Amino acid sequence: MANKSSNPKEGMGMTMKRRIFSVLATAWFAALSFIIAFPLVAGLIASFRPGTELIRRGLSIDLDFSTMTLDNYKYLFGNNVDSQRYFMWFKNSLILTFVSVVLTLIVCYFVAYGLSMYEYKLKNLLFFLVIATMMVPFEILILPLYKEMITLKLIDTMAGVIMPGICSASTIFFFRQYMIGLPKELLDAGRIDGATEYGICIKIMLPITKPAFAAMSILCAMGAWNNVLWPMLVYRSAEKFTLPIGLNTLLTPYGNNYDVLIAGSMFGIIPVFIVFLCFQKYFIEGLTAGAVKG
Image (cartoon, rainbow, N blue to C red; front, side):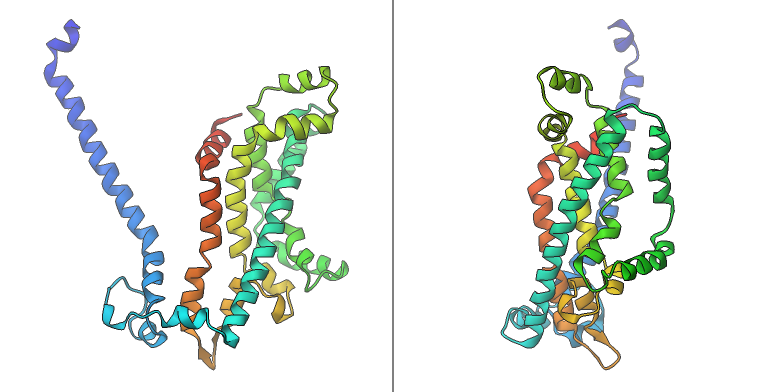
């Protein structure tokens, strides 16, 4: 107590430094938030303007209410060819994303479980090979993967789009890092109670990894929903196009349908946003635990 009271200036100096640091940090993150939110806000404003205004002004956050209408959304939800095509693409993206996320989480969970909960020879080598695949750009793998899909006769099928990404190295890595921090005594307790290895994996360990599943559900859903390159190579039929591919077809050398493009893009954000709202309770917990455990 004597030391604290004898150095009041030092205490005031530390308090001032903390306040300055807090102000600078707040200003920095506010600037980052503005930079990140600008495209979203500009796109939302542009979705209420005619396509001619977008060509004339570009994307901006200038609120000119005289040019803002609901015509784009009325046309998008109207009974016309463009609307029917849009919701066909929307449905295809929903199905593809759901199936892709479910299969990816299941496969990656079991792989990560084997890499974290058991001890055996070549375990570290296998994990190194999994991590090594993260260093290979996807563009390098496109040609061999495409030839593989042709050989398996999976071109123009949903399976051909999903299969190459079903065993994601980053998702396996995240699950493994999370499960390394879980007590392995739970496995022994389950064996003593007579549970099988599959029973321990599914009934005991899987419920504990809910935060990891929540975090990976959001990230995998975003990746599957926004994926353009690989589905564009695999799909041949227009009725199977996903939303990103379908919206891309609205931009042609003969004309650009910006009215549907911008409004459709904004409406296409809603599914991922809903997924985030559903799993946000576990999202931060899962990311933090996966980052520090192990």
